[in-house]
Length: 249
Image (cartoon, rainbow, N blue to C red; front, side, top):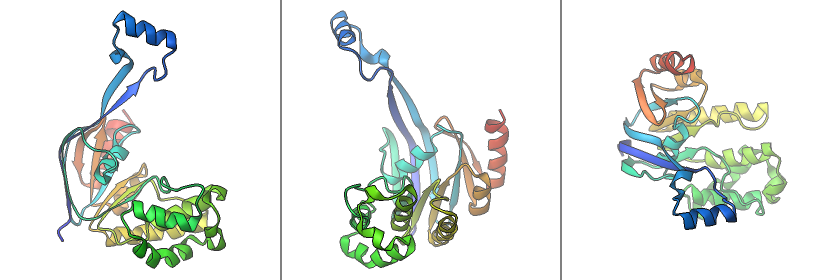
């Protein structure tokens, strides 16, 4: 299958409430004075008119300052956010590596969360059963898998989440700052796993503040600023543009 991603004039808009919990007095004053609550709401575009075509074979790095829209772009491609305007067309199975373990149930065991998290990634219980032993081995949790995850340390939690998320055959791989999780031994092991996934994926999109990783892993990069793509091209050129235009501005 010819995998691709096509974003056409995509906008994602968020609202910020300046006073999300007004007092009873403020509520009555606004209600009976005719004042609108619109002054208390700030709308902004996290993504603004994004036009982006990504074809098979692309390893795309995404550069931008905090708040530029990098993670929003990945979450929109993953289907977590829906655009307010525009169109997204995707051919291929999307595997997101971001906010690992966000869907875990703290009261359930690690083993039960393998199946819960697997279903959120689009896998059936039968498919996860085939992956269970490999996840157990890679996470190195052994008997801890039968304890509720609320008793896990942050390192154990991260190891299980990473092991579940990367036990897949990706076509389109989305990576958001997951290059380090757990102790030094597991960081090295997980870095090798990510490199293997990158090599096997048809399309890879990487969000990281480490520009050297983008230069090393990517064959294309874009620069985001205030929700817009302001440059697109060779990773080395884009890193230089980003540093000179935004970081050192």
